[in-house]
Image (cartoon, rainbow, N blue to C red; front, side):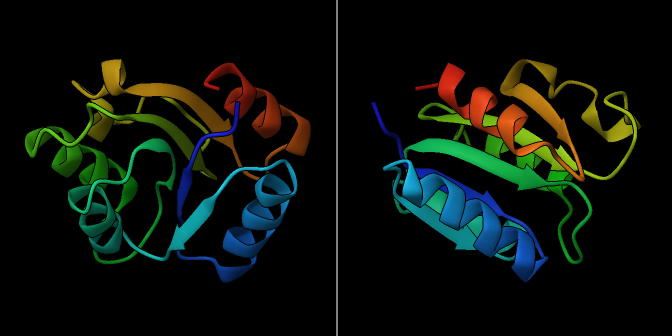
Length: 121
């Protein structure tokens, strides 16, 4: 079963690569380059899998996830964090653990990312 995927990353190459990979597998993929646009998509009834980068300007991934939870937008999404930060125990993650289904380190292994998505479909 394919699900919608929303990719949030400030790197255009990452956005395009992830989009190409998952569209090829039959998913509808939407890309945005910051957390504010992500929140707008969720407020406009996006349902599916959210792949969110942590290190972004303006609103980082943790702040984006916090905003999602604070606005009760987490109900119809599954969140996967993608980041080059080497740890899953960041101070800003406290309290958000129940909302994050997986944590993928960059540069990510494509097979690992595909498997993480597959578990949620």
